Picture 1: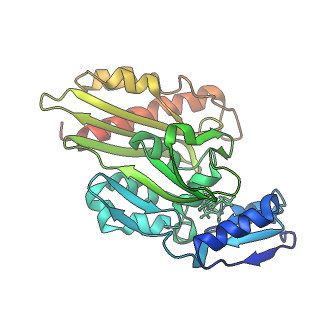
Picture 2: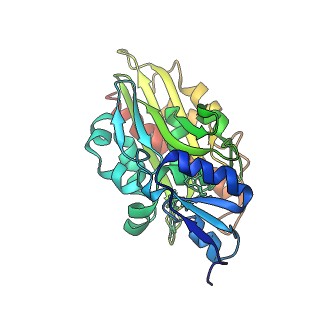
Length: 289
Ligand SMILES: Cc1cc2nc3c(=O)[nH]c(=O)nc-3n(C[C@H](O)[C@H](O)[C@H](O)COP(=O)(O)OP(=O)(O)OC[C@H]3O[C@@H](n4cnc5c(N)ncnc54)[C@H](O)[C@@H]3O)c2cc1C
């Protein structure tokens, strides 16, 4: 199906984009890679009268490392992250996540900012952002503000982004020495979206005891969530197989697991536990335990 008619705007800078957002209000939608918005428009699930394309706005894409974090522009594509040497050397789990999103066409056009603003419950980035404790940098008429990932995902396709704001950057903290991170998902066989996906990041001390853990779960519920019970069960323990198994058993706790065409609540809860165990096991291995 064709989308409903719309006017197309191509602002040349952030100020112009924010001006258009302020003027056109609810009638406008930001266009990034278009790989979630355009399909929704074709199905007439979204019918914006105006599209504000960020494609020609400078300064919204690219990856910079500043010693503490990777600062990733919202318009950076999944492929740019997958292939970035800075990402591969400083936070390789991000390249791992990017590499399992959709197919090459999706990865070449889709952006990290578009994914995080869209907040699809089966998207991959949310699990990684939660595990790594990312921060969203939003830009609006009153300037910039930062939102921690735990305050970002509000519900099904709902985020803390305010009207007339755009997502400008994502800041992902680097992991300290002795850390490892991994992302494991059970992909939908057609779209590759996560039926369930789990990202785990662990930091171990010299004795192999876990001092910090971050675990994000996507796909199972209406939004990605932090698996707090798993994190609490990991910290303070030597992460041998028994400790990992016990922690992973808590992976579906606190997730509003939804039955859908992909599986029942029981099946998807089981996948949460299985993929949590796999992601934590790999993260521990990568931490050098
Ligand atoms: C066939 C197919 C398979 C896919 N498989 C996967 C998969 O396996 N895993 C996965 O995670 N995703 C998958 N996706 C989704 C893909 O990753 C999209 O690229 C992503 O969800 C949205 O990014 P985008 O840049 O295309 O955003 P768009 O589609 O342009 O925008 C999406 C929404 O976010 C808003 N938006 C975009 N950028 C900003 C911004 N900077 N500030 C504020 N609002 C903004 C838009 O207004 C719109 O509402 C798939 C998509 C397709 C078509």
